[in-house]
Image (tube, rainbow, N blue to C red; front, side):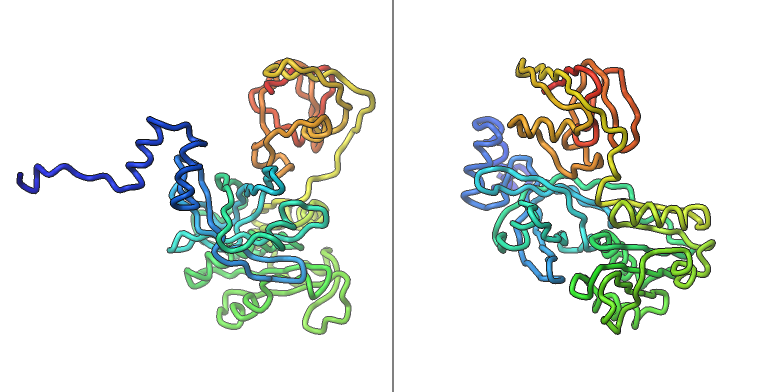
Length: 367
């Protein structure tokens, strides 16, 4: 038989996948495949922890090696991370903190939140070799397709994480446009990436960084104060010529928006804490779960996700801020109120986000 007629032998992993689809359910296939390689899966994006690096007193960076089901990301985006903790799958959303890499590895930087099950686990328990489940990348605060003009990055606390990914992405290209970063933290010990940022500013004429602390007045190498008009004017007197990106707690983003939105060329922002809930209503309503034919009594004015969890249910969730859509489900009947905007929805919807909507009347959900 000549070479042209020789049948092509599929790689071993493709053979396993074909056998898996024929012989096994996805969960069963994943179980047996993981015995050969911890990140082998029929179709689930998984990643192995390669390294863990401390960044500050309460923050660390995890370097992850995804499997081939991971579809990539743009600098500035988030993803959902899931891990098994004491027999329960816990999912939360984290920003990617590095630019897309040639080796395919990705990095997330995690702040250990008091009482946060997943953040505490990732910062203090998870170790190289452990496997995490990945969700697809999401988020709209990404760099424009065309690099033009001048940019101003405003970051507070964990808001530095997506900014770091975007700055590193530009650094790989030689910092083709002027970028100024103003980075706020409470104390010197909570700062992340400062040495790298200052070293980059020393090498790149197009990059400038200013670090501002709100509580630690003794740190001589940082400025002090909160975001306001005079401080912003001092850092960016040419604000009217800059595209502004802001990320941090909701209050910080709201202040940045009020100061910069009408003066800057464009304003892009993302908050990592939800805005205050508005128009809290009292009383309770009946919530019918159509798939399980179960009826619950839930309070009005409380997020449906919180109400369901209080009733002992565990609906899928991620960011808990109405961004990632992990908790979305269908609403067949009833009225809901968006907890951030106050908008009331009376019509059936196909993707009601449980984390940012409350019941306003009796409801029927596809759960």
